[in-house]
Length: 116
Length: 447
View (cartoon, helix red, strand yellow):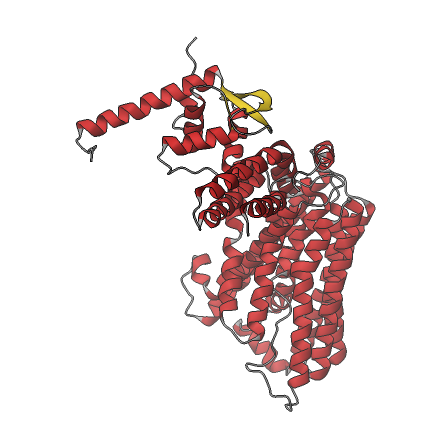
């Protein structure tokens, strides 16, 4: 069944980047933060407060879910909490991406989007 | 400083700073946030840039300030604690800060007045109008009148009464259908009629509010006693003014009085009424506010006494008795110092210490005691202050008359407080005790 994504749109930058970071698999907080930083070419540096405050609200609205605690083999032996997208989260990030793509298409048509 | 030590110190500081978040949020995410910050520290150390740590800290502090505020504002317990009194628990510190805000402004303004600055007028009177705005927004949004709106509401009520009195006496053409404001006698008649209408409306409002409040929760014997005492004291002050007025008429030559009555210059009925108008206007207004509080702020229980404190805020004691400060050798120097000290103590009590004690008291009975003692201290200081001024700077020859007047006015305020404290006893409608207890049981993160 088609999920209603309209109430969630437009997403805040933090929510959108967290959803995008989780689009290719589950991640822990630091990995989400690094992914968002990479996506934006280093422009978005989320602090711990913003990241976990946003995660708390996304968990409450059912966009993401926790998948348990375990160490990240690539980093150290500390246990970390992992998160992944829910079905609703996938629909919302997809709808938001389409909305942004449509905006980009409009910008192209009006020749305001230039490539340097 | 080596890298490892920088990371350890940063981690320790950040763990302490996590205390700025609400306890529930800290327990859920504090460890993860500390872990993430440690990762960021390691990354900054790996960058080998001189300012990497400084940059990280600046970003983190900004993030912490904004997100901690956001978490406090959105935490359900914080909102419920601010909007409604929590049974058997003191008001949370966030709410205390908001309750004390009007008091802080007025205390600050009082210091300005003592130093001879004029901006305190702007501050106090503008604050009187506009401090209610955020309260009204929250009221409309949450459909609950917040605890921290009580003092601004009392303040606005007082300011509104002041404005109304000014309009009644200076801009009669606004109220009168006869455009005769340039003719003194007719203007006076219009003013008298307007005053009579005002009094009738106030008394009708009081009777209506009494009926409503008594229907909602039956008045206790003490509340009826407080009301009776209040009305008796108004009657005492009024009748004494009427007696003084009539004595003045009696002292006039009979022929002159008869002529004035014939020409309409003197009307004994209206004259007597005018002599008590200010007393009726002030004290009926305070009674309306107290009864409104019994209905409007019933969820706040005895914290609703803050309404009366808001009403008292902009009034009563002025900080200076002369336009400029006298030198040390000046005979007025000691008087000025004592006036200033008294004024500051009074304002401190009415604006900060009293409200703080009341809202941080845990139970309704403790709030009642804190309210009663604070208000009695205010009344006592005001009485002592007035008497001191009286004896150092007498207003007239009839000393006994003035002393009785002062005592009666303090007794009226005390009766008003007694009435309010015995009316404001409603138990708040929500029970947040389990929520608070569970929150307090959550272990603190950090370290």
